[in-house]
Amino acid sequence: MGKADRSRGQSARARIAAQQEAARRAEARRRALLVGASVVVVIAIVLGIVLSRVLGKTSAPPGPATEALPAGVQSAIMTVPPSTLSAVGTGSVLSGSLRPLTGSALTSGGKPEMLYIGAEWCPYCAAERWAMAVALSRFGTFSPLRGIHSSSSDVYPNTSTLTFYKSTYTSKYVVFTPVETEDVNKNPLQPPTAAQAALWAKYDPPGDTFPFIDIGNRFLATVTYNPGVLAGLTWSEIASDLHRPSSPVAKGAVGSANVFTAAICKITGNAPASVCTTAPVSSIEAGL
Image 1 (cartoon, rainbow, N blue to C red):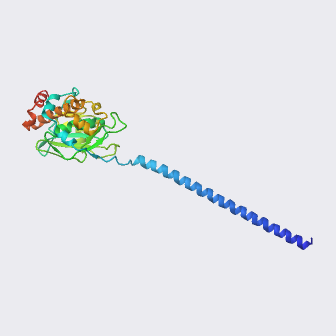
Image 2 (tube, rainbow, N blue to C red):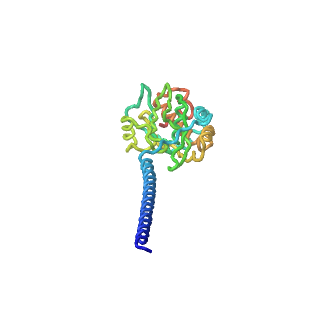
């Protein structure tokens, strides 16, 4: 092989080697870009998960929507028979559950006022709402009430109950002011006014426990019966049991309703007589 041939051979090998080296560098760059892109995607996914968790903690989703009560439930609340009310009496109401107050009369629009401060997640509020609804239905009328369940992570979990949030109540005798401060997930609903918070702190210090039931600044109620009697029952089952004097539900909720009724009669001057002079209201009222 001549010198010229050797030179051409060396030149060809050099070009091939250069091309191979360029190809290796291009492949390396391509792999680096792929790895970089994969890392970016992974980082984006991780950041998305972290942000969603952070935002979920700082801004909890709204609580579940309330539900329309099954047909007949509200009617059953409003029509507990006089015979049942009389047979139950004070039922299984806890001793000392109604405490006398001595402050200035609580009124609104010239009528005595009953103030309730609670929360939709609160299991004790869940029980008291049934009793308050039965009692107040003897003095006036609620707009269609809605159904909820108490917190699933508290005592007496998932208790079937009512909510007074966005409800209306009409009565010639008494004003009912409900304040549901938080929903089932403890998100804010209705903050109490300064005046309401002051009463809460004054009569039930430190003013942050539920429920708070101020009946005309003459009586205070918090827990009047054991919420456990409602455990595992549906709205319809509870409503039905309100009409059965021997049921634990009636002994708790209707017994408490009779006590609430007597206290309301005390602040309305026994109006209406059709309610306040009947058994067992008159006898309970005499003992207040």
